[in-house]
Length: 419
Image (cartoon, rainbow, N blue to C red; front, side, top):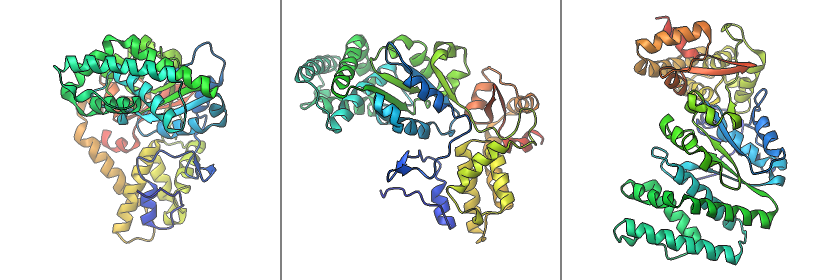
């Protein structure tokens, strides 16, 4: 596929491309800052950066979360490119989607992904590991392959006649694509979880010895598993997940932040809130800073002459301060204007887009949901209940911060709760 070029759109076709919903922004383009990147007010990524740059006795672990579409992947990429971070750490960023099945994720899958990606990426970048370490890793590999072959009743399909690189890649692929053998393979790793952590620590120590930089692993898309899986990994196995001798930033499901199990990660948790568009309990009063941030999001991607000014303002209001929702409103409105053969995106196009989003919610929200949403809109209070949590994950309820955290409903739902 051709490389995406970050060019301000002067027509609807290019604008459609520029508002791609899933477009984590590379931090640098041709040595210059990414022109599409918009720094949010009081960006909490600076808190995470400061924490990573602070002194520590053992490599730190952090848990990074936020609403779906709020920009977590982009912020992790920018954190990784920070010159101070690169001076102190040897950073690696990957998506757990590439290494495991996010619909059925286990703590041992995550640990294997950490060790495997550290090893493969370091070697891919030309890094040399000591011969003694490679010998020890190959001994461990032989033991694991033998045990898995035994568990699978003599099936030798797991054995890899090649390097450790091939072993890690094969293990990740089988855990991701073979549900029939996944449980048995996991059992082998879990019975020797100390050995797996020892492998991770040996690789991390070797990289530090070679680079004089601590490995920093940034794992994206770990916010996708449901609450039960997140609880099993980060609550039930917290101590194990803290043992690797490298710095790690785990993305974590926001559902865990809205449960009592949050206590297990609260001392190392960083939450990326949405852009505040109005003060608490004042939905008709616009936050100047928030609206300007979202205008900048549009301005960097599209010539504002392609859109009526009032339509831009309405699109911002309906986005709820969520970057991905802003892209969705814009993309749908642009498509509508293009079909109308209009010269500009108008309010009628934005209304069309928000109606489409509202109709999606109309299909899935029941009467009890709507009653709870009315209370949320009235009081702007965060509540921690089994009914409240799914509404946060659906973005029917959005969290904001200005000192204290509070919430409101997705703006497209204001009409729906009053019907």
